[in-house]
Length: 80
Image 1 (cartoon, one colour):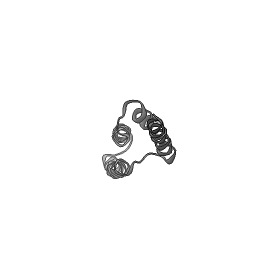
Image 2 (cartoon, helix red, strand yellow):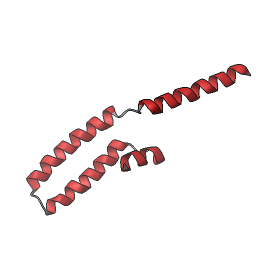
Image 3 (cartoon, helix red, strand yellow):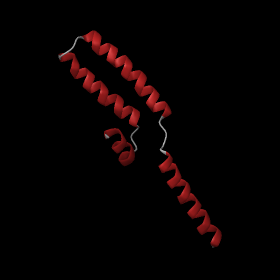
Image 4 (cartoon, helix red, strand yellow):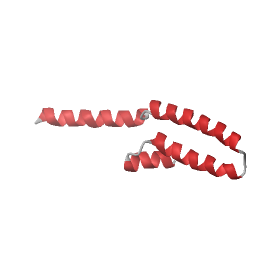
């Protein structure tokens, strides 16, 4: 939810937000778990975040809304 909010409100890349959040959580886990387990987790997080950032797309509903707005602008311009 934080990633989506920051993306919509401030235009911050959700992949970077998720990476930072995950690194903070896993970093604090070093107190409870060993360094080896944390390193494995960090490798998984880097891979997941890279994939999310690369393939993040808008939902079909958002794309349809933009398409409808463009059509309305074109219709308004053509009637003038």
